[in-house]
Length: 287
Image (tube, rainbow, N blue to C red; front, top):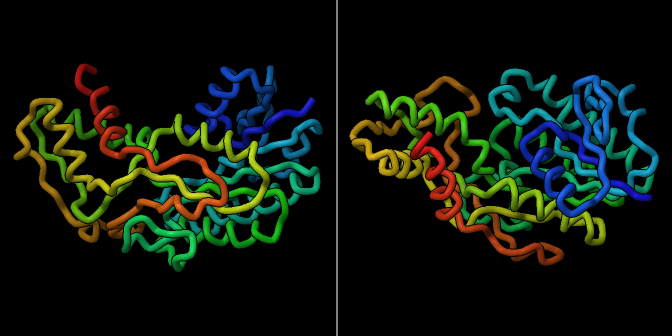
């Protein structure tokens, strides 16, 4: 029997992917960095190559979702993050390639420079931070292997939870919040990302795919929407430029949307960014 493998099963996308595979009654394993093996969970750490021996031999499809995703961590520890995001990610894909697995790899809109909306597949790749540079290097190296499909995505709205919760708490205390006026995102849901990953895994291997929201929304707009939902005075919103803070990764990102027209196979259309952010923010009305 063939099984799927989720590398990064404890992460945001991995948890949602496992939930959907369970609903579809698709047999799968999910990896964890916790040294626990139970049911379909296996111990696997990208920085511990001996743990890769735990990969079952009946895996035919793998989803590579693990890695260092914090922009700040990648900037402050470029060598450590490069090891997991590039070096070991390549090695484990080579291993899975040898086992004739179709590997679906998650990538990012940050391989582009963010200076134009709806970046096409054929546009210049000019990443502006370490995370984007590492994702681009990974893509370029994986292009030399067979049975690899890559999905570039924009911002998953659920990853905004800590930020939105912080804003909410401050607004309810009538404290000012300072969203960036020069940063935008094209939000998508983790559920949609997981379903597209499954669809890609059932298509012929190969190719780089795009999936993003259908509009770039500023963080100021998101803050204003939150204040309106909470019925809080928007005068508490004090926009700032990202360059005024010291974090090196906080470079202006005017656009994060991706053009999906060049996708090798049909995986759907851009998700409605406004609906995504509105539905997400409604959760914070009555917390």
